[in-house]
Each structure stands twice: as structure tokens, then as C-alpha cells.
Image (tube, rainbow, N blue to C red):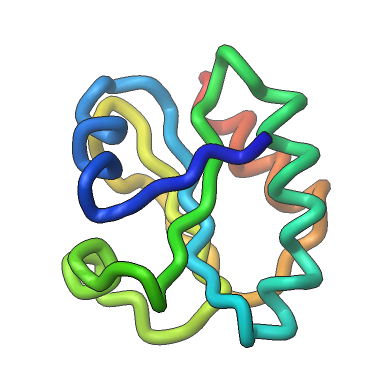
Length: 105
């Protein structure tokens, strides 16, 4: 199951240095709903290697502002506590796997 990020736990998880992937989404966002099953599958596939989860932009705004999230879905990729990649818009599972695999190199 995808991790649920919020303003209270996201920075702590990013700071661990473990690869982290955050999907910024909202309940009303149709493209977000299309990639939600992909994010869930990837969270299971990479469990223990990469922390993959979701951040509801309607429930918090600290991260949204800090990372200048203007469109959703936006997926951020972190390695060693630093933002290394940003993907905006709908994505295929293969495209996201490619980006996640790059975090593990």
C-alpha cells in the first residue's frame, strides 16, 4: 500500500536518505485517479527499497508550496534527501519504473 505523506511526516521521510517518491494528487483530479492504481502497484513492487506514497494537496499545503506544485498529478523523486526528478502529468507504469530504477543506481 502506498504511504500517506502529510505536512507532519514528509520532511522526516525525505531526510532518511532512502529513495522517496511522492505523488501529489487530489480526489477531484481525473488524471490523478488514472495513475493511482499504478502508484499502488509500484509501492508494493518496491516495498523495502523505495518509499512510494501520496500527498493530498487538499489536505496540506506546506509541501505544495515548498516544491512549487502548480499542476497535479506531479510526482517528485528524492534520493539522499534531495529532489532529483519531477514528473508532471499522467504517466505510464513503465515510465515511472524507469525513474524509480534510476533512484536505485
